[in-house]
Image (cartoon, rainbow, N blue to C red):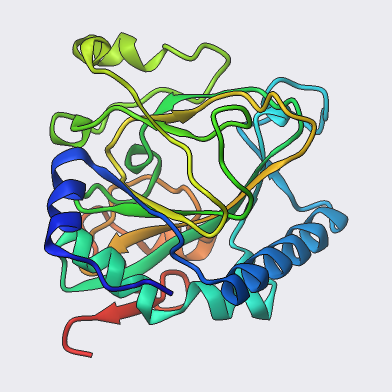
Length: 268
């Protein structure tokens, strides 16, 4: 794993709100990520516990079901995925980019865009979550080559600096986010094609989306959202378990090590 980050890469990330780290995984690591992620997704879907983008009410032909197959918290159900997601090297890279002293997992999720799958509309991540932080971020690992043809990620650079924690749902209209942030229409989108084994990190407030998959093969990615250690509850439930959610008051520190494991801290 190429987990040593240069000062230039940190500066690029903080200026633009995203960075592509090509060949982040070596061949043997990529093989493990591909096999274990596919196993975990197959197991989850066989149990009828897969989550599609938004609520398609079980209709596989719904528009949202064809954006991508979304399986959350695979580390909770698959030992191999737990090993991958709890790797402290990932936490150190995330913390170095964000400039924080500690990193917790918010949640992991597999995002498989199906053959001929629909595009992913422009959106922000952090406003969906149960904490509000300008230092939140995600890793997106390409399990297949991500290309202009099969739905690679696109970013609006620098939008993390002016985002206001306002968002829109990920719907059928690609441009809905610009109803909230009309000033972003003038920003030139940046496409991020990358080979399998690459990692893309982006800030939770950076506007991003993905194109349609125009090919007859899936475009698979494994992701994990990260929360800076010390982040506090904002009142949104998101993935919090019912009993934990009920115990929280706005402003409480989200430091439950079962729900949100601490995977790296500067002090060790």
